[in-house]
Structure formats: C-alpha cells, structure tokens
Image (cartoon, rainbow, N blue to C red):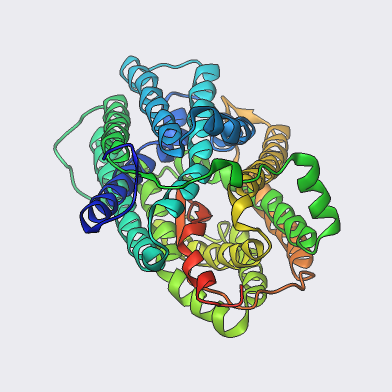
Length: 469
C-alpha cells in the first residue's frame, strides 16, 4: 500500500503515524546540524562579518521567491508526497558541496550563497505542501493530539541536534572550548573537519527521512485542484482592502526592525566577544528551548485574554531586546537574555499566527502561507541590508566590524522596534477563540528562537468541533 491512495485501518494508521514521527525527528536533526551552522561556517572560512550576516537572510529571500513555483510543481507531479521527497533529495545533495568545502578549507562566496539559496528554496517549498499532505492523510479526530505530541518530539530532537553539533564543534576548536569550560578535552579534530562532520550528519539525517517519507501513504480523495492558488495581485488586494492589512503591515515593520541587528548577532558573539561555535549554539538552544517551553503558557493567555493582546504584549517585549545585548558581554548574562528573547518572540509570533489564520480559508492555506513567507522574506532582507549598509559605512578591519559599529545597529534596531510596536498596537481585530496549534521549525536563530510556521492541520479539529473560528 506504500505510495498509493488508501483509507486508514489501524495498521496503516499506526504505520503512517510512526513514519511521520520518524520524518520529524530526522528533519529536526538536519535543521539543528545543517543551516543553523551556515553563518558559523562562513566565519570559519574567513568570510567577513557582513557575509556571515547576509548568508543567514539573503538565501531565504531567494528561496522564498523560488518556492512560489511549488504549487505549479505539485500539480505537475500530482502528489505532495513526491514533491516533498524531491525537495528532501535536493537538500541531501546540497550538503555534499558543504562537506567538500569544509574538507578543502575553502569555498567561493558565490557558491556558499548559491548552495544556501537552493537549500532554502526546497525547504520553504516543501513546508506548505507538507501541511496539505498530512492534513489530508490523518483523520480529523486525532490531529490536535498527534501534532501536539509530534511537535514536542520535534523540539526535543532539535535540542539533541544542537547538543551533538556543539560537542563536535567544541572538539574542533579545543582552545576556545578550554577557555569556556576551564579544562582540556584532549581531542582536536580541527575546525574544518568538525564542520564537515556536522554537515555530513545533517545530510545523512535528511537522507534517512526519505525512507520515512516514502513509506507514508497518499491520502484518499485528495483533490489538489481544490487548493486555490492565490496570485500576488489578489494577495495585495486583500491586504489593501481587508482588516488583515494592518496586521501584515505591523509584522513587516517589526521584521525590518528586528533584522537590522538579528543576522549580525552571530558574528558579534564570535568575533567581538570571542565565543566558541559551541557557545553560539548554546545561545541558540537557550532561545529555542525557552520559546518552546513558554508556548503552552502563551496559548492559555491567548485563550483567556485574546490573541490580539498576546500579539501586542509580545511585540512590546521584543522592543528592548537588542539594546540589552549592549549591557554585558558575559556568556551567562547573554544566555539568560536569549532565553527571555525566545519567550518574547514566541508570544509575538503565536499571537500573529492566531490572528492571521483566522482570515485564511482552508483551501487557500498552502498558497497564502507561501505568499506570507515571500512577503516576510523581502522584509527580512530589507532589514538585513539596512544593517549591513550601516555597519559597512562605519568601516571594517579585514572584514570585521568594530564594537562601536555593533552597538550602533543594536541601538538602532531597538529604536526601530519601538516605532514598529506603535504600528502593532493599532491592530484591532481579534479571533473568536485561540485554539491549540502546533508549529514547525524551519530554521534556528540566536536572536528570536527560530523561524516557525504554523501547522494548519493541527487546528482543523477545533474548527470541526465548532470553536467559533
């Protein structure tokens, strides 16, 4: 029955659930070991701070543009599952040049951006299709419970991947590790060998997920033609005329403000503060863990006080975070601050997801989420370029920015966030009920806990039960 349309008996349902969970675990390890380390790898190759910052954002923009072709590709292939398997295969192949470059100790900047862009094109292109597929594959009655459980397994797996990556990179840079830990680990892999190892493991994990994807079924009666493709002009018209236009404008403003500083936090920690790659991964882990652990609390607050309040409160909490980076360069201070950062961004993003999904019809979710990723990626790139221009204008020393330049963009980002909060506070719409929702992590970042997308399939049961949504 593998690969064929099927109804679920207990055996096939159990098999599909097992394979979907296995795919989640292997995908999580790829995320934690793969693109999370792209900026650190750029620094290890001797690229400048600007390149390390831009490689965290520009490829996502290129990927977001390319992923708009995904609905057309899915229709031509005729199966979301086969499309996702193709995307996963391309991701596996994308790690090959990264491993080779690490072993050689060199990689042209254009190739680093090209490989990263292809990776992000298939990463973003697969995400909406995956939601469509699993939403149709599993019975409505089990979705909320299963996807909530799978989300927790996914989060634990990402933490495990960050731990593995941190240990491997620590073994590749024992001098910095000794300064951080206070003792000699007695092993020196070499930094480039360590990066080759983590990228190889990430590729193998994604290769393993292909097995799980292959053995999940095709949902019976899935009509791809029922999933409308919303065009750019229609999307723009809805934004201009609909109540969600103010919400999207607020999110775009905040994204630009955040991205002025966010992509450059990694080179700041590595170059200015002298943190090891393992310490940077610990910062990412703290932010992601706090974001995940706080999510149930934010959900209860949204249910009790409304999604709009959660969105506005979260936006207010985001405002001072980049300015707080300026207070101290202590590892433990920044570790605690990153935990606070993840929690605040979690509140802000969850509030937005509640508000946004209220206005999206089920048959348009794949297309609308793709357009949102495109729009938000343009905003992120705009903010990153503003930050890069500001940093470069203050001069560099062999591609490395000064401490004063970093302080300037951290302060500027906080000021712009305050202005963006003013826009966020003008949002007036709310949802009838904030129902439980699982999210999917597409990327990990030190300054906001990660790039999340909602799993719409996880909330449809609440809709069917008459939640008022």
